[in-house]
Amino acid sequence: MNPTLYDKIGGREVVQKASHHLYTNILNDELLQPFFKDIDVQTQERKMNAFLTYIFGGNSLYTGKTMRRAHAQAVAAGLTDSHFDAMMQCVKKSLQTLELEQQLIDEVAGVIEKHRPNILNR
Image 1 (tube, rainbow, N blue to C red):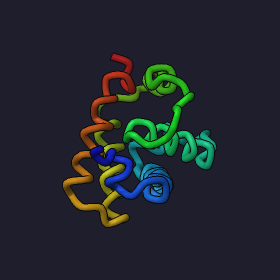
Image 2 (cartoon, one colour):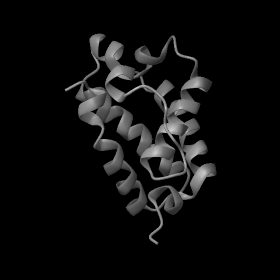
Image 3 (cartoon, rainbow, N blue to C red):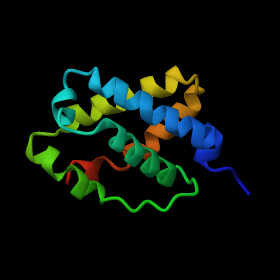
Image 4 (spheres, rainbow, N blue to C red):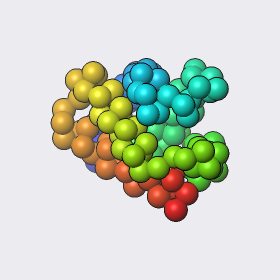
């Protein structure tokens, strides 16, 4: 049996750390900050952790909102490809902080990138 991306990146511990670092980076990004000003970051980290675990093939039944529904207000407030690109840079920076190999960072980015159309409600 082939290992999942979840397993290859280090499982639960790494996904939790990546989720934390991601929101630290997002909150320090001037382009993204306005979308997160009224959000409980700890709750958001837990949601992101569950979502990443799910899309990376970990043992998680993601029961959160669809990506379209979860981001509808942000899209209405002006969320665009530029914001998604900035978020992807935050993802990559988070994974570099955790010293993941570039191949794994690229694989993670590819999996997340597949969700761009739904996140941007296209």
